[in-house]
Length: 145
Image (cartoon, rainbow, N blue to C red):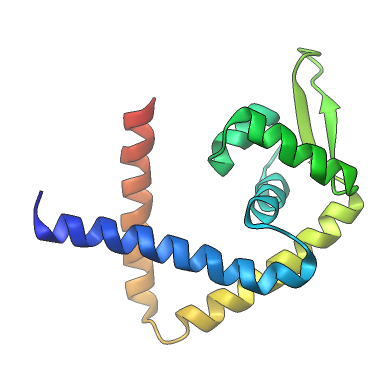
């Protein structure tokens, strides 16, 4: 592997981790963990309610971990599990009104972090970086199918 590939993968990993930790610190006052706010965000952004297994895949955790997370979020009144019409064994996850309100707070804080961190970066560079990362993601997704 070339040194530029090693440098890229190291930068990708460390930047993603630092980004999540920064947002995590900003959201601490909301009483949300990283896994919690990521779960809330994925549910909020989904075009349709996702199954627990789809959500686990998106968040990047095992199914049992997602069940425990959803138990906590449901217990806090932030999400609800809705039976799937086609398969009663499948539960789809939807935000409650309280979950939607919390998501708005998360979104405001995440947007503030983005503005703060990306303020001095040329928009053309951001566009190129986003396209590169989306392409890398597509390759990774294809390799894991």
